[in-house]
Length: 406
Image (cartoon, rainbow, N blue to C red; front, side, top):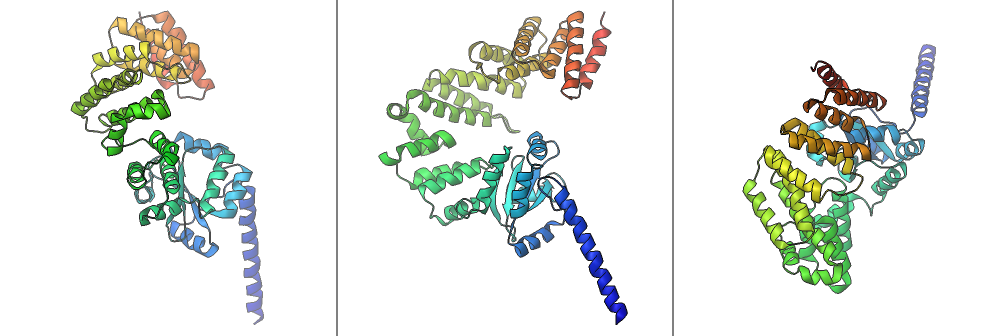
């Protein structure tokens, strides 16, 4: 009997020590504590503690995923909120049960965050990178019964969803990289367009778009002058043009290229004469289409036309110029075109110099046989790359080739 009591005391003592150790470990860890138990055990734990499971759905190559881990997940305020309200787990979508999980919960982009109950039912979801404040605010919706994704989805499936609730569902699907075309069509099928809801209806068209084959879109195009009087010509044309552009992209964004449909849509968009949108959108789509199908001569001409006439002067200008200049380096040999590409990348560097556009410049100069300038830019690119902690091995290979030039 004494031995049993002593043994029990020892066991209790060890248990307390072990529990205290893990408690200290959890407290010592900054930010969110991610449980490493099996998912089946986490479901049981979620039921017992009446909590939702927060799942960070990531991949190892996802830049925004890494940014969230470094800048948000390690924050103490975030950790306090998530560790108190959720059971947290990380899951690589490309390993072990990841692919099965991806299919079951429709994980279409990264990072995606989903919240499940103890039965594995999807309660809430959102995708993307967020600030600390945004991430906490978004996650508060997961524990608010009237803001959860499942609240709106269940109402939609039952056919008892209101106009505003359906818009909320579409926003949640849009922000989770899920399709929302069916919900948009349901909106215009179930709810009549009335003057008091005009601005709400237009926000749906503007924010979510329409299927190009839908009756609602056809009505919008046919009666666009009516909408001009309410929403301005520019805003209406922008929406119509954007829907056409989206449909044109579909013709060459999959494995099967549909050239016939692309040409048909292109012609329809031009004939609509949505100036200035029609021609700028066609120019934008054309060089991407010719790039995908590998028609490099037409790609070069359409890219030049786009840059000369429609390239927007904004924060993305330097990136687009560098991207196109690199395509010219890779696929174009005519000197006149290479010199145009050199002009683009020089402009890109003027706007914002980094490793990538400096490296592009070095490659183009090398291809043009300009040894001295090419070597200078290659060395500069390597210098920038090391500062930016970027892999510079390709530029180092280029530098050796440049030095071997006669």
